[in-house]
Amino acid sequence: MRIGEMAAIAGVTTKTLRFYEERGLLPAPTRTPSGYRDYPPEALNRLDFIRRGRNAGLTLAQISEILDLRDAGQAPCHHVEDLLGHRLVHLDRQIADLQELRTTVAALHEAAAVADPHACDAAKICRYL
Image (cartoon, rainbow, N blue to C red):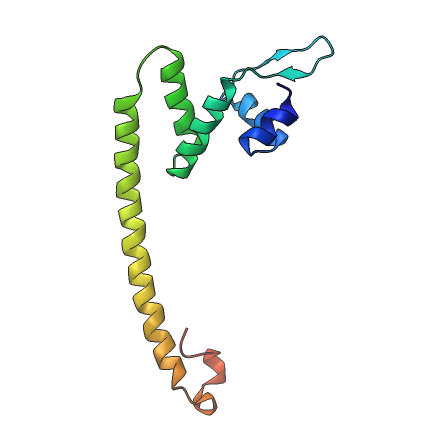
């Protein structure tokens, strides 16, 4: 199928397909006699995998590693497990940081809610930040 049809079915742009092809995430498709890209139907499976990997928070480089393993005939399951384990550690760290930030912002918000604007020192711009 041509690039526009592939993009529409996959829910991506033609620019994205070209980018994935340049990065090696999608194999270069055959070309029609007039030079148009002609993607095989199985390219949709690969695009779906890329989407699922991105939804899990993996980088395109990490997704490329997984695809390279699969293309070499190896099951990438252990590699994916390692990547997802590292992703979980990173997410837990982000969640903890966000919870701490929320506590800080909530305290600042409470203090600002009862503020007297006339008591604010202009040199400090705002005492709550």
